[in-house]
Amino acid sequence: MRDAEVRNHSQRVPAQAGVAGKAFFLETFGCQMNDHDSEKVAGLLLSRGYAQVETPEAASLILYNTCSIREKAAQKVFSRLGEYRAKQNDGKVIGVLGCVAQQEGEEIFKRAPWVSLVCGSASYRKLPEMLAQLEAGDHRVTGLDTDTDETFETEVTRRDNPWRAYLTIIEGCDKACSYCVVPYTRGPERSRASDAVLREVRQLAELGYSEVQLLGQTVNSYADPTPRGMRFSELLLAVAEVQGIRRVRFTTSHPSDFTSDIVEAIESQPKICDHVHLPVQSGSTKVLRAMQRTYSRDEYLEKIAMMRGANRPIAITTDIIVGFPGETESDFEETLNLLEEVRYDSLFSFKYSPRPNTPSIAMDDTIHEQEKSRRLAVLQEKQREIQSARNEELIGQAFEVLVSGKSRRENQWAGYTTSHRMINFASQGKELLGTYVKVRVTDSGPNNLVGRQEV
Ligand code: SAM
Ligand code: SF4
Image 1: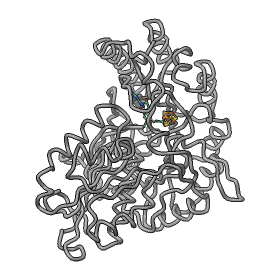
Image 2: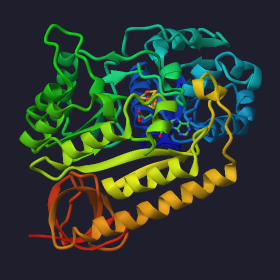
Image 3: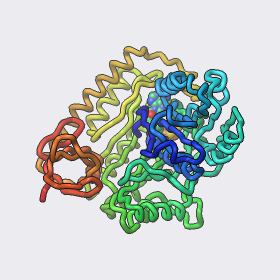
């Protein structure tokens, strides 16, 4: 799952469009789950008469949806809060949402006394009450419970992408990876009812979305709480059958819950995208044990073999952490040769960062920052070579592309294949955005493909 990027969730709505000058600015740090939470928060605020604006200056309510997965991400939030300190004097309400809110709690009021709202992601369902308290003039409002079995449902979600809709099907996490703040910041695992998911997918299709991405920290651990008791693979198939839906994606899958019926669903239903993000974290069983990842290298490789044996090629991507406490040079070598063995289509790689409230904080973080950086660079270079070679193998092949961007250069467009490869391509077509076209690959680089539309 991509993270640590910063995006500004704004819609071109003038500030005066809100009720009595109520306007909000919402900035998001972090992964797709955070993006989607922000879309729901925006929907909630819009339904309460707020307008969404593009700058903090134009807003009466400034919200940061935050990420604390690694130290740098959390630091970024505090430095942003510092930048907007002066705004409080203009009568603006400043709020912190998401993982940093959950992790730091009321400490935020001490570190940044100009903040009025602190709400962790497990408490978003309480946001309407909290907003009402703020509107009534309260200066310190918090929502920090994680002992919930409810999910964050809203009547209106304002989505940022006009073609691809994110949809959370499972919130929180019941795994206990020793380095990870998520179980702490997002609370226990809660699956959404399958009928609510399918209802939303039908609405999305009616609104013109053709691609849905099902989200969860461990999306494939989905356990339908209704009497239907749908398995994850059954839900995938049911979503794909909704009229108007052309692509179904899902992320992130946990290797331990990645079962053969998911591969069978991908094989049997072409609308389910041929891409699985299956984070391995390390190629060394010893390190995996210390990370409490619940599988060994060999067990992980069995899942890879299952996908490689499918009757349709499946792109596989992963996440890797280098420099976990106790990772020796030979453990790291095992990760490098895992890369050679699997030949991932892409990966996200991170230097281990000790996080508060996680079990690994008690382990000696013995690996020097410099050594972590060296391992990261070596890993990324190896992956670059693998990706270059893999992408080159695709030259000459044709793929269906959902067009999502137009270049400033004339007749140049960009989009994604079902395997989630970015492709820049030439076409004489007009009004291609949001349509599906067939593109033949003519060239490639490590991070993208180049092609030409077939007519
Ligand atoms: N739930 C997903 C999983 O199990 O893979 C992803 C969770 S997290 C948002 C995304 C990635 O951040 C993880 O897969 C891991 O590689 C990385 N990550 C999490 N905690 C980390 C830490 N303390 N230091 C470095 N990287 C970390
Ligand atoms: Fe974190 Fe592990 Fe849960 Fe992923 S599975 S969110 S890495 S605890």
